[in-house]
Image 1: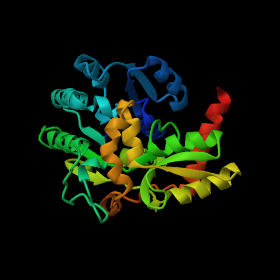
Image 2: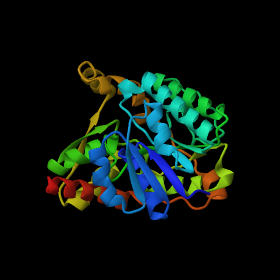
Image 3: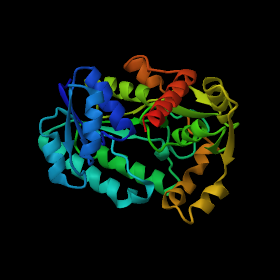
Image 4: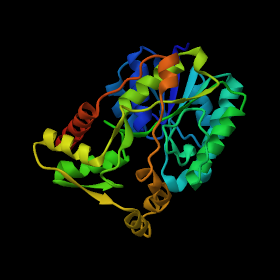
Amino acid sequence: MFKTAAVLGATGGMGYALTEALCHKNIRTIAFARSEENLLKYQEEWGPNAEIFAGDAMNQADVEKAVSEADAVFHAINIPYQNWDPALSIILDHLLDVCRKQNKPFIYVDNIYSYGLHSMPATETSAKNPHTKKGKLRQTLIEKIKNSGVPYTIAHFPDFYGPHTGNTLLQYTFQQIIDKNKGMFVGKTNIAREFIYIKDGAKALADLALKEEAYGEVWNIPGAGTITGEEIARIASRHLNKQVSFKPVHKWMIRAIGVFDPFMREYTEMMYLNETPVILDGSKYEKRIGNLPRTTYEDGIKQSLEHLLNRNAAI
């Protein structure tokens, strides 16, 4: 459907993986982010199909220049919780305005916050009743996309993990257990949650975006089933050849840390996901697009740990 793509937020977790996935498909990919230093470093890893553009998504002129030669625009920008409002709305307005003017399809990376509380696997037609500030904001952004007049694809993902993922829940835990035997694990360790290996998510979204029939719809892209913290610890123990254990981080602890840490203060309201997890149903994707990439947790966790070990060794 397109020969050139623009990925905004290319140095973030999903942005990096999306750029990688698109380049592997021999699609010319314009990687947009603020840090030219990081873009230059990653460009060597992405290969010759990647072109870099350093700019600020809060500046519409930068966005217009970055996507001017692209056939499709991927929004994978992620910013700290404490900066979400109003920055997320401003960035989205800029992107939608540029896509409208330049007649470009828009592909949006979203999380599960807008689903709110769900006791059963959530389908794309499940009622969305967000009860948190962040969930309500994400739902507002979704409605803005749907009403923009721009061809769009919206994809919901569980929490990411894997190489280059950054400050996600599992990566936070993995980094700790590389250096010691114990790691802090956000939530109860005996509750099954869903995560997605980030390279799987990027490949699935790249495949989805290339299908004309995918536009004008919302899609779920789930991971390889669910897993508990206890199971993650056992996999890590086998791979690191040492006994690994997790110490659960409870809501009161997050709230206490939040007195001094603005990110943790904002995360407190999302702790419900560690008690009543939202699980995504991906049957629509598999029925209409094809098989979802599903790296097993065993393999994904091993690759995540290896990436961190190699990165630490290079420092």
